[in-house]
Image 1 (cartoon, helix red, strand yellow):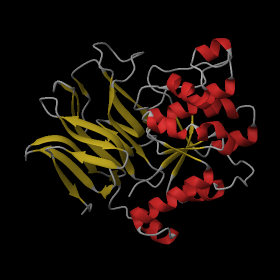
Image 2 (tube, rainbow, N blue to C red):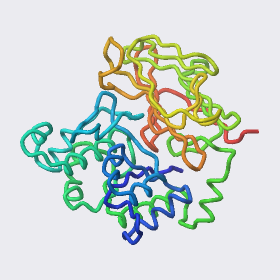
Image 3 (cartoon, rainbow, N blue to C red):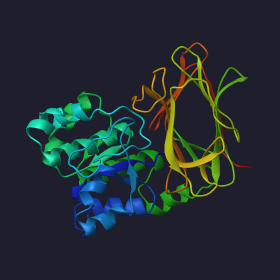
Length: 343
């Protein structure tokens, strides 16, 4: 079970309807089977077009990586920070898709549209989404090269995305029948999605007594317990239930959107609807320093599930013991304990 997150290009916002494939994707979004997102750059692009701007408000926004703020025109940033999990690769993306580099292009041949297209793609990369939906032929043509360079999100035309999503549903649920999938989604006894597993509680341990990570279901929230270490095995951050964060090094950055009530993802004493924890790898506070790696990233889906889509845990020697990348969960010399019911 997985909830795909797809970012839409501004050209397929489908404000008047009729974009092939988008009506079906919007229906799946409204059923809460998928999450349609917009980037922070779309705020700038939609501002002059009220109809599209109003339509876009039904979708959550994702932002750029820490330390990456881009200005294409005067009047404010064209991409703003969010709970991103990876360093920006905007310059590389622009070169792959459009053949020129930033700020080369910015200084010599300022093309606003190409710069903003690159920002959309960069935020897809930085936020580890599953796909980007567009009808831009230049971007679609660049798909093989982007994949070859390690950009692990898919790029679709809308109808291609519909077919891909149906194929995923058959693999995950054995059907594309709305009623069957809805029944699975409404099973509130398993509100945590970790990798492709749904559960009520989970623990990752080394041996029988050394915890790395645990999630427990509470009333309208999921409580996190986590012990993060750096590549040498030194403690970075400890997150314990109902306690203040224990920062062991000044390299940690926690970003996210806070919940309006006592619900969602609970880190210590704080509640989030989306959050990321990362380390800059530098011996100084993470203000303009880009993240070296993400330690944990999660969001609350519109279905109510808490979805972990990025995790890395190390032992006291710095060896990686557990990782999550989107729907993939890997354990190395660690054990997984799950509880599939709240009872």
